[in-house]
Every structure is written in C-alpha cells, then in structure tokens.
Length: 147
Image (cartoon, rainbow, N blue to C red):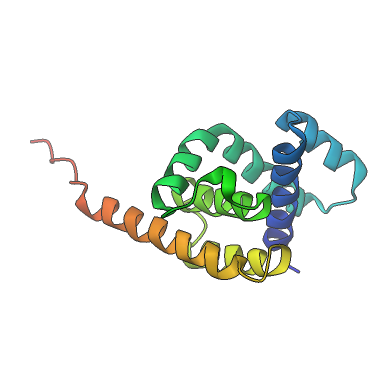
C-alpha cells in the first residue's frame, strides 16, 4: 500500500473520530499519532490533509451541500461525508495531487469503508463538484498583461 493511500485512510479515521466524538482536531491527531505505529511519510501526508480539511471545513461543506441534490450533510453517513470532505479538499486546495487520483481514491475508500452504495454515491457527488470546479476555472479570465 502506498504512503499516500495509507495517509488518506489515516486522515479519514481522524476526520471520523472528530465528527463522531466532537474531540478537537488537535486532540484527535495526537491521540492517533500516539496510539498507532505509522510510517512518517504516511503520517505527514495524513496530518497535512486533516489539518487542511479542518481549516476549510465550512467552505468544503458548503460546496458539498451545493452539489448534493436532495442530500444534506447531516443525512449522509459519517464515512461518506468525510470521504467527500477529503476528496473536495484535495480537488480544491491540493494542486499537487492529480484530480483523477483524488476521484479514484475517494471511490475506493467509499467501497472499502462505506456501505454497498457508497462508491456510487461518492462518485455522483464528486462528479458534480469536479465538473462545476472545471467550469469555474475555464470562466475565470486571465489577468491583463501590464504595459
């Protein structure tokens, strides 16, 4: 298993813990780090993802709800909701990660940790998020060159 794949799994577990227990993000990160033996590269990637998601969670949640037809975040399973947060964060804030990798990883996480419908559910929402995001990028004008 690759370091980034493992890092995503760890980030998902931390997001899940915060969502279910209400523990502060820093406490959840420390608890995980001190209770599990994780390779440094996987941990560094997971911690970066988790901290980024916690920083932008309000914007990420708004974006997910706007693209989730007939679904409120509160009605989604905790696992699906946090996989979506993870993927949307990567799509919007981590240009170093190819979009295709993010989409595939999210679907795989959904199939592994979610319900039998999670993969398709996550795919549908992320497809709308991605298409909307690509449209936004194309409609933005490049700055005018200065003379």
